[in-house]
Amino acid sequence: MNCVIIDDDPIQHALIEEYLNEMEEVYCIGVFNNPIEFLKAHKRLNYDFIVLDVEMPKMSGIDLLESFSEPANVLIMSSKSEYAIEVINHNVLGYLLKPVKFVDFMKMIVKIKQKLNITNLSNQDEKDNLFIKSNGMLHKLKYSDITHISAAIDYIEIFTKKKKYLVHSSMNKTEEKLPNDIFFRIHRSTIVNVNHINRIDKGFIE
Image (cartoon, rainbow, N blue to C red; front, side, top):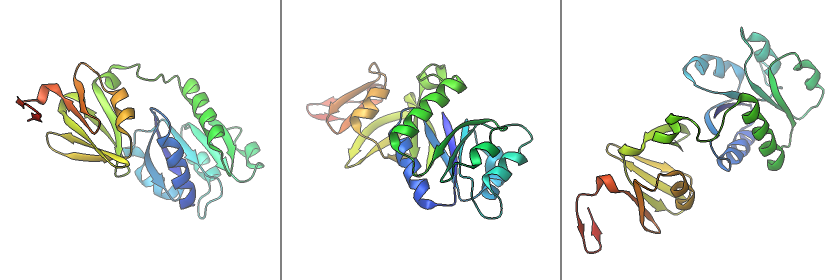
């Protein structure tokens, strides 16, 4: 499930992204400081819902909702409760008051998943691919293209035939997502795709 964040407060950006990193199958694919930036890019984004602040300069969150030709799935986050009445006629998935606690955000995301009828690991796309977030962008990697994965302190490095991705995650969490008939953990800091092994010589794998 993909979302974008629209908020003029960089602290809120970091907080919500941190919350999202703790949740399975929910990815932030874009962060915008205001609705104007979002409108310039939204047609290129494949998002399921928007995390939207209300009070922003030039164009408010309410203005953005009213600008849509078709209703969008939106989670409102605001420091004031009075805007709840103004957004009631829009396709709002929920309304959270800042400062937002993680437990409240988590409960809201569960409700959003149910409302959008999105189930974890239920479609073929997720069965054949690993979704990762690297350098602020969401990437879809085919299992067959991943050669190996290495631990890098608080991150992991995912290697493909053409590129390396640095991901803020753990080896244990990543291993749980991988099919065990293809990937094998040969060391606490290394997972390999057995289909890419060319040679095994004592303690060395090529």
